[in-house]
Length: 390
Image 1 (cartoon, rainbow, N blue to C red):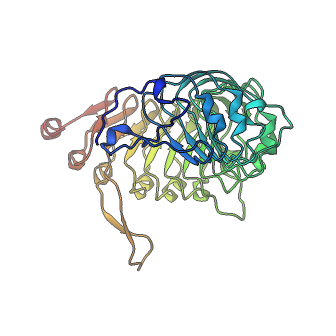
Image 2 (tube, one colour):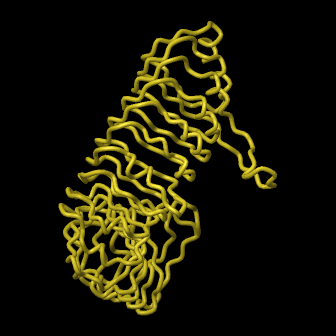
Image 3 (spheres, rainbow, N blue to C red):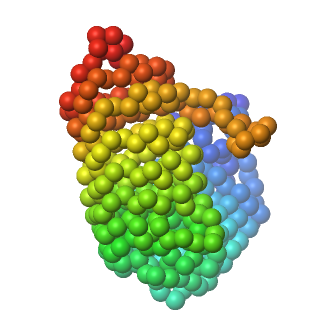
């Protein structure tokens, strides 16, 4: 029987019955109500619904439960201490609910099998002692929970942690040096109040978000340190900080970058030629700095660019005609290789609030997938054909 659920009331989660559901009830799947013994239940996924009750205390009786997903609902109230009774739990997702109060050592003390914890976007305060070591997480997501004001020292005990998401966590401190010696794959520390110079990061890092903090000084110490290991960072966001100095000319060490966000800082200088090394770059954000000079022809080598945001700077000269050549095409992974990939079309081009002059190039009309084009607040003119076609 197909059932369309608009709201699930607490009564369905009774003492004697647990409803096992798919993560999204809008998928049109056939749903079956089961009556398993709570002692044998191993997998329970209720995520992505409209559950509007408190955390079910009876879940503490599910001693064999290994996977619990309650994320993206309307669950509220305190997280019960009975959670610590599910000692076999390896995956816990309670993100995007209305839980309040604390998430503390009392809740987590016996969850020694826990490897992945998602608790983001709740009204929780995380209270864990600095030398606490009962569990070893692989993934930790505490975004928009209150973790601060100091950097959580207990993270130093997490020897196997690979993915850390802790944006908007109310932390106002310097990130300790030991943190950057760890081999994280992902670190999202955006929208806090971290201060100090940018760190030197591990070559194992793949995604790093330090945006919307108070980091200062130059990009060079982080980007221009030569190492024996190849850097694998594909996503780097240090926008909305207090960074200054010129754009460093050492992008040849960061060839895996696909998204680069440096906007809303105090960076100066011209776009360096080494940015042509970023052949996989698909999204470049340099807005709201003090960059100047012509847009270098070397940038056209970055043929994967789908988003270019150079707005609110001091760039001069004419808009290059080659910007109209960012249409998708098939390229070889390496010369003579049988493997190819399709580069994206340019979809967003933001050049407003600069000092560009001359005629708007007709070639921009050839960008078939262009969705957003913003050239306002420059000194541009255009042919009748360009004005009509744009």
